[in-house]
Image (cartoon, rainbow, N blue to C red; front, side):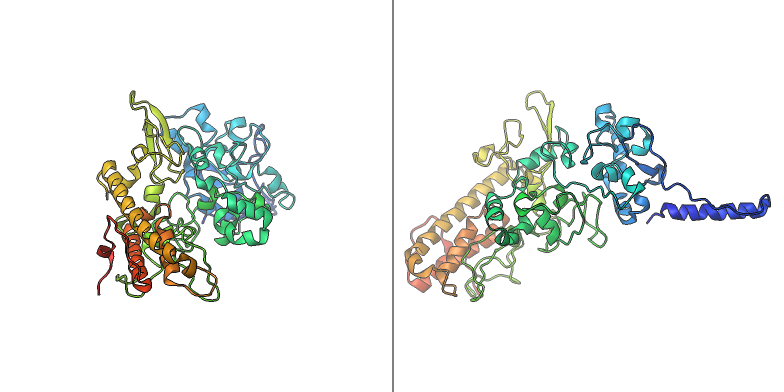
Length: 495
């Protein structure tokens, strides 16, 4: 932790005293308060920038010591040097590597580096997000420059003012993702049933997630009404100030949590993607609702689906596919956050950087391999490059073939199970009598199997659940299993 300005002033005072004693040229010592900060140059627009540039000490950091020490470890703190060392130092690039009006909600004036070209405004500092600090340091109680968490789709402020464009199209990719909008049903519920919508906010809105994760920071949109809350924005997953103390050693990219820890509470993605992976069998609290966002537990093979006693035999209460093991260290992010450079297939000329922030594991792509943002396309027009990142699949064709075969097999088994459940659905699938019947458990597993991505997150466990469900439906209700191209019994465990 770096010492603040007051420590330097105290040291200077000691030096003055020693010098006076040695020189004996004055009769008394006069103390004067030093300036709290160097006055900004003209045309700076109230931006203060660095106090000690060589030490990376911002004016803000003299008081906000914790934020200063964390910010120093981020790529933002070396943004100008990164640009200089890239060999691409051009004027239009400098606006995103220096302190100025970009990123914050201040009036659109050419302040900071843009107004002065003063080196004190090198790098992306506190004021890039919080706005000019001059008024605040002159009267802290009268001015609290809050930062926005809005991505800024209109590019007026927020992360999107810099993290966009052909070379850094994070915002463009994010806008096409489901993170880029509040789920319509949740938004509608927030407008009509605010009390009931609160339980959804912790994973469907930025403010709700930050609150659920114990982030006590203040920001412009913090107290927005439920119906006006932000979707899952950059600042939900990334901490603008840098890594929080005590949050692990394997956290990169200013993420709030690790993406490689196989744990529901400490993995960034799984913290939200782990709801209702198994039914609530408590007779008091039981709900007939089906699976909801079960990806994390399914990937890890823990606490998933409805189990029928010892029909499924497995080790340590878990069946893990290779996607959830150390063979895939980045877990969800391996497939869902895949970055690449897209070039023209004929000329080889650069088209765009793909950031992976559409979060699509096998995105629909155009002829050059650029994700289109479309949801429905043929399997041959999907990219499987993310599947080759961890080295498990030799090439895209191998991954594509494995996906097609596995999906077809699971779809076939699921259809067999549904045919059995439908025969007793009216009598056995009620959801309101305080108990779980075999048919209700089987129906839950059927719904789980058809959740998007289940055939990839853990195909082995899905097949085992389907096979057990089919067998139990046959046994409990004396039903005949309809003919199928898949023999479910090959996936049943044996004692």
